[in-house]
Image (cartoon, rainbow, N blue to C red; front, top):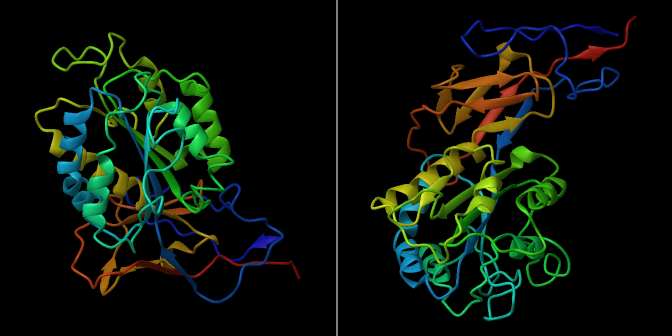
Length: 332
């Protein structure tokens, strides 16, 4: 077996490490690549769960969240089109309210691109009421929502195997789950999705050490903070419920989520890098780790730079990647 076409190196700083080897885990050397040009679309998908505390102390916080939904949405949709499902859960796992025990709030059970009056509907679903159990459980409802019988019953269709999963906790209390710990919930989700980098978590909470925001109990949210530490977004994924710039912080969640979900495409074949063409409608994007694209040979993926200046394109425009695949032939 011999490699007939090498992966070219651009020499750009941090673009890639040159190597004639096939990126590990990408292609079996005994497999022949197709001869025609590759065409792949960046179609980012994410399933988002808002887990909202519906105990008696949360009325004002829920209204603040609903009032700032536009800040989240505007930043979430700022760049490329993302295929999303959004569901809402409550922290009631004891049956104290209608919206309990891992059931997604509302009918239909989740929102997507086709939902009429999407912004208005999402804002209304953020107001989950305050009649839930005073024993706030952030983890257990997530566990129940994403397994049978809820997953293939009332919550059917929400979770997709090829989508990122994002969980946003909104509570003024520590997690009081009895089924799940931070580690066991993380392990459950990794097993569900296959890869830990597919799970993105955020917390709008009363952080440990926060002196100017009332908690529903005296306990600091150590369990929730431990779970947040497992996320690829750790360090940038914890926000205060009482932040005077609450709307800005909600917007930051939308922006960070969009960048992480829409920032890479794992290619199906190994590209000859000198042939890669990345286009967004009529806009051609060149190789640059910040203002263009870069290649990661470890997972055979194209990464989108965080400082690309996107041109205005028709609604629904998607990123297209053309390339010539590296060819492998049996020796003569």
